[in-house]
Image (cartoon, rainbow, N blue to C red):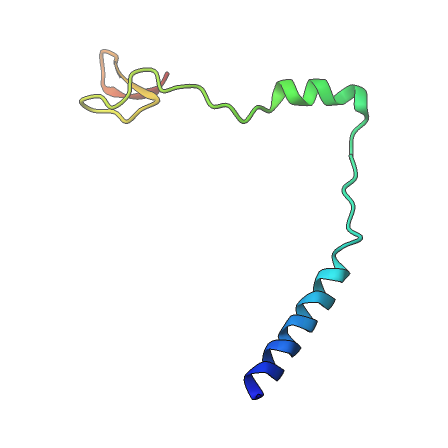
Length: 75
């Protein structure tokens, strides 16, 4: 009987806490005409790595050499 009472109290408290967040609404901080420019600037698509894992560098980098030294440069 005690387990039922605890489960009932937890269920009621969860419903009460859920009802507090029910009225939350999102707002747009920018004007609608600016939205298309923002979408073009920020995209969730990431460019593919240029060569994958190389002998010296991880994906997204290429081995670049100059007369003085060599390093992993972003592609």
